[in-house]
Length: 360
Image 1 (tube, rainbow, N blue to C red):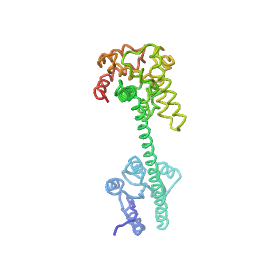
Image 2: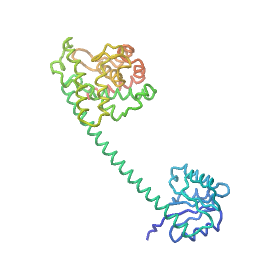
Image 3: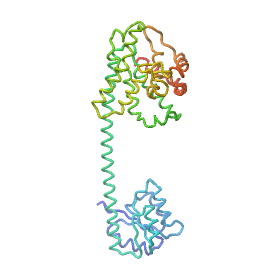
Image 4: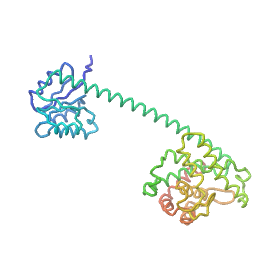
């Protein structure tokens, strides 16, 4: 038959007090009388009590030092501790309670009072643990629901971007590669502490998947232009450029239909800013320098690099070394100079992405 009684440790260097305490409590709890704090810590390695009755005035390690050591240990910090003392003064009581003791009991013990105080504290501790388990359970449910929402969100994103790539049949794998480039750039940027004021608030759970929508506006561009085998005429290029504003408008429309804007905010900034240039010569607005959203400045590097290394009907694919040189030569004109420095640090990893997702 199992013993479901709670477990109490009495820690006191006075053997009479240990014997008295055990005699008072043994009918209600499993009691471990312990003659010193040092022995208590040895015993705690094998026995985890529901409550500790801890004498204050002990040689070598007193009750205050023992309590501090208990509270400093993740393994033992939640064990309730009641101090035992011959006499009590306000300052000593305040010190003990401030350190984490839950109560004081004066010696000699009153059996009914000691039993009732332990009973009350164990009940309160049991309720606290129950509330924590309930809170943890609710937190886990919320986490799972959030994960399901993110999975659904990413599935929708993937379906939309697959549709874009299906129509734009000369840019196979572009979206997945640019997403990988962006992650490399963001990770290195954060590692270097660059633009932390802005980037520290980002949630990469939303930022990286949202990059898939950077070319979503191409869904409204005609096949004749989107899949033209030759270089676009100036008039056709002007039409192609409208995919940026179309994409931003589509993203805003989705925003108006949902309460979840985190990933859409990033998506809009990436879609609207990735064709802007550092010197102000880009499109659709002609933003310059730091006026271009950081997300757009990052995607500009990823997007141009992938266009350079990819096959097009009107050009050969550039090598990774050639693409790197072009990106670096565009520092201060096309691209943010500080981000180009970051790019140079991860350029070899960019070429690895090209090899891995050559025709994803």
